[in-house]
Length: 273
Image 1 (cartoon, rainbow, N blue to C red):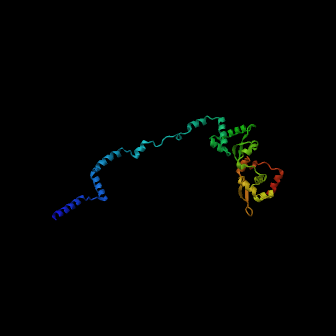
Image 2: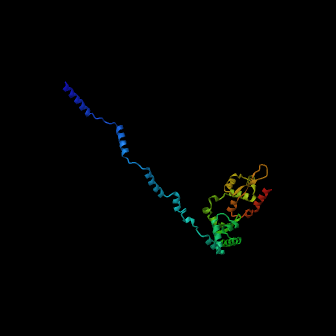
Image 3: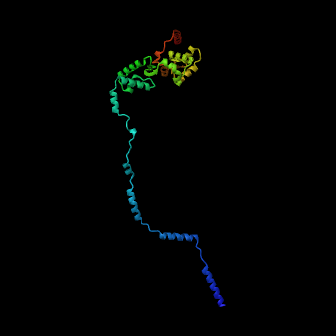
């Protein structure tokens, strides 16, 4: 019996020795972390500061960078096209021929009539020089082989095609808003031009037809405009011609309108009564 008990006890001890305890995941992670912490070298804060200091000293500041770069790089746009002194010398050496040529160039480039005062300002010529140049240009363009003339329109001077030449090419070169007026529109415009200021009712009393459509066309073309109201009951609008009208027909003023024949003159006199 004793022998059997010892055998059983030895078997139990043998089984205990063979039993292996498997660690959990949490235990493995904790052990790994402890090993890493133990093996990591100690960090010296003062050494880190000493290493960072030279790097900071070697890094240029924004002010230093700005000081080393030019504030503005020169370009071709900064240089004048021509020296003012050279222009002054060229002006001083001009004679009447070159002055006339310059004035002619200005008139060619301008699309609106220019007064003598305006030409003096543009060319920097004196009044006498401008008027002398204009006289020379008038003589030059009065030649029969010239299709251009120097015309005085609404107080200014303008280079413009001669009427006899422009009439032949108006179809091609006329402005879009200068289309041919109908006979009725021309008649209405003539009544306004010779009788201004005039009311719509007075125009209709001369033409004996409604003038609404013709008045609308002339207003759109800016040949006529409202110039006031007549001091009669109802205060009807008065109409007159415009600067565009004078320019279109190459007139210096209303006084340059062609004289009316006897019959037309009687109609306007009758209207004025």
